[in-house]
Length: 249
Image (cartoon, rainbow, N blue to C red; front, side, top):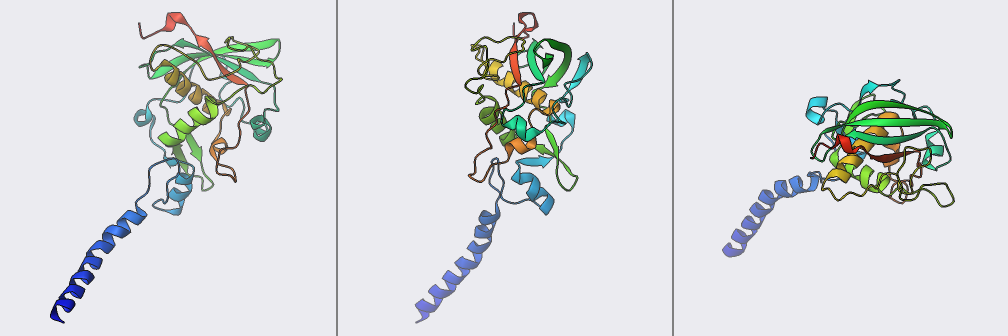
């Protein structure tokens, strides 16, 4: 009887000691695109998008966009259009071809020349600097600014940009990359033998896509099936690299 009582006490003590550890494990947020809980309702809403409180430019890897020359039209170029129609690939203009004028696998901010086409025969060019790891910020329904986390950024690149293809029956230049007005078959899926360049190029393209409004936070929301809404807008693409701007030499 005494042994049974001692065993019961020991078991009870084990439960008491284990309970806090189990509780900690249950609420420990899991890393990834979707985090379970935030420190507040505001944080929970931001984390559901894969967001975190906005950081400064210095902490996040430099400014998203710095105009060098031209009218600066790319800043907000796509923001006032019907984005649902754009997502579905129903809009034809404007179009933007991105040519990298200064680039390198370890260069954090690249110089980009954007050729903006408003119709098949009219275009303008401008230059700007975009940083590969700049903060991509959103403003939530509470008016709070938040920044996409690294998982959300990677998903935007791999699922949206790299996976993007010109729809069958639509004009494209195949594997040839030009400054327009027709996009290549795979707008952002550049292939390079130089290690790290292709990924950095896509990160810079993501910065350009974000500042122009071509890509938005709603493109990262999963649909009812739990996967991202198909993104079919091929009006922006990587046109190429200027050999003179290679900083990896």
